[in-house]
Image 1 (tube, helix red, strand yellow):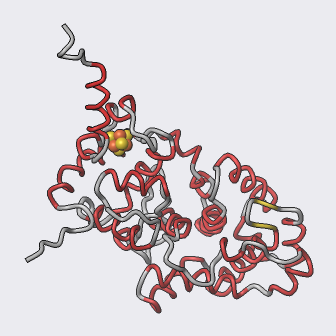
Image 2 (tube, helix red, strand yellow):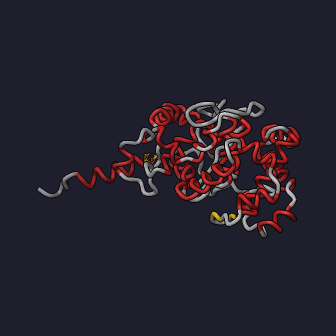
Image 3 (spheres, protein in one colour):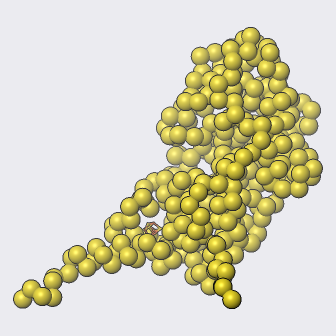
Length: 314
Ligand code: SF4
């Protein structure tokens, strides 16, 4: 009978990897927060302000942080001390005042206006973004289903007619606020959930109590996917929801109650260049994950072999 190998981590490999991941988390420098959009919602003490800032920041967090973070800072500065109060009172005319001329890669002012007006609707009608998400989770029963319904209800609550008259047509609304989640990993939405649900700790805010950390799915991007494959958390090569689930299932063997806890350190290991696309002896020999890595030891051994004197030469 053919033996079916598990696609993710085995229990034995998880037992080996667990302490190494703990060492990585312990060694992740706090300065990495400056390169991460979570720095922005962390500026607000009021949970409603933090969740509005969090969703806006997470959805615009694509491309380079040094490009999107200044855009976000400028927007938040213009929204005043309480982004939640700002969106609750917002109308299309106010959105046009804030967003006329706004462009960041795929997105223009009209896209962001729909998002901000939709968040204003959620706060007025439900009291919080958490209450809206909680209702969707109860109705759909899965994080993916709830996220799709959450973005759809925010998007569909805004009247696009006045937005278009004030700011022109939307351009990248499907990218910013999809009507339905496809096969992709929904990285930015899972990142937003991680911020809201995990913690509080040095990274995540831990504001929402209606979802447990155990329910979360990793915010999979190219950096996390590369490191995850190297550690055997997945053998899948695509950036998909299935791969994100598989990585999460592997991490659950290490921390069943909070598998996504390792995401920040793993993602920044790739993003910072500490785990580069081509493994190098310098990086790998200093990496706390070396003993669990599928490629690092080979890179180190090859480099060491190159340095040894040739035994045939006397
Ligand atoms: S050992 Fe090297 S390749 Fe493996 S995770 Fe660490 S830095 Fe990346």
